[in-house]
Image 1 (cartoon, chains in turn blue, red):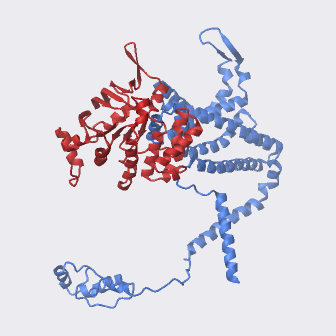
Image 2 (spheres, rainbow over the protein chains, first blue to last red):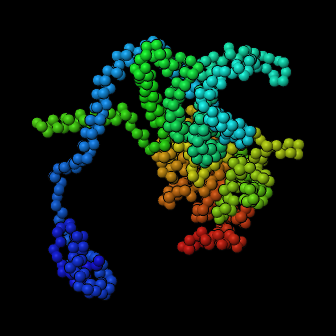
Image 3 (cartoon, each protein chain N blue to C red):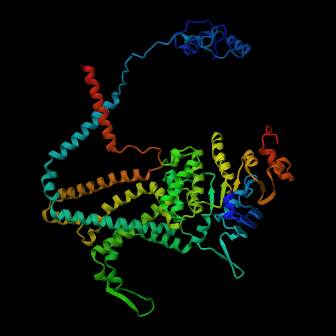
Length: 370
Length: 268
């Protein structure tokens, strides 16, 4: 524990003053309680390295100047082993992908840009865009309704989300498509009278496309409403209060003050939803609607090249998701304005900086070589 | 002040009459009657929970009163008297009234996604529908007046607390309000930043705008206020000039409060 005050002073190596204490303890503390009583007699005899000399004197010798020593980077052998193992695995997977003839890459290439596939892709994009946009607009209104002080609006919004989140999308799509079975005609008029402004048979009105859009949009709106509501709730109440105190109108308060701040927490989940929707549109194959997935199914049912054609669809879904992910990065960056002191560099800027540093280093080494 | 008082003799008169306000069973304001003259600077003091902030928030109708009336320059806040009834104002009428009353919050409440300049110009352009170019010029001028000429394009998070509060003051002033309400404007600030904000408010006090300041800065209240109001448990316990309140408080509760908040080294 404590070094006794009469511990003999040993020359301490420069800069190693603290090691004197523990090293000196065993020999000094062994002679019975002598060390303890001595420590009690001198309450300020706490471990003081190099005691008997001015405190810290051991460290006072002139420090060695290391300024012209080059720095040797630490070695990370484990990292190298891991890199080699993962590298081998990736190589093995790539090897199997490109050498196993059963992937039939030639068939994939043949169908990847085939006209029917591209048309199906267009339909998928159209469904995603329309259902995504309408879904989020409706979701925004549902979120505002849910947050309104009118109990009727709030409960209607709650019930909407409850119904559309509780039923499978597949069931919703089939229900919309078969609406004609439940209601022969759809008409617009004054309720409880015979006045009709517009009337049409349900089957002519609800095409496959209409059923697909209805199902996807309403389903999407139910989920978006919750995402947007969560985002709005995450904005500090003081923001609304300040906006009210400044006399800003309600719509301006929502769209200019609250929504842009809510976007920061809405966006990551919203993009999750949109990316989910891209692949979710494949469910409309039950309506025999010729989007990407249904088109591919039709083709492989004819040609029996099931896996290569599924690969065609998969590759297109990967392309769409990649584009959306890049878009997500930039949109999130836009809405982080003011939330971060400095915006992070974009990957492109990072690459440019990396290349600039590289070329600078290169020119330095070349100079050194000479 | 002189020019303003000639053209608009009663600009910024606040008449609060018998105002009551409860949150559930908790009665926060229990009959407040107070008149603030145009151009007057009133400091409201009191222990926390005494209803000071609530009183301030009723003046611009952020908080609805349960009973009593508040009038600014003779115009009732939140209501219109007609045929013996008080008709509640529509939302846009309330908003129009609020643009005449600036408010500065304890926690600044700047819009973090807008720059200092955008924070200041937002309300004049979109609440008062004033011309964008002149609003911008005026905003730059106001930011310069609070000492932030070089920060007009900074986002709130890039500013210190004191700078943020000065932007918030500029934002309130951009509406050309008759009255500015300050709700503990320096309570969220580090001690060394308090004075830069108080200097701006002091400057404003001399310009002839009616100010109501809820504060814990006793020295400041004594130096700047024309009148000090001491509140406790939802009522005004006593009011008077700073010399009267700080020098010879008549009420026991005022004395007890002042002895707690004034440092011993502070001789009056």
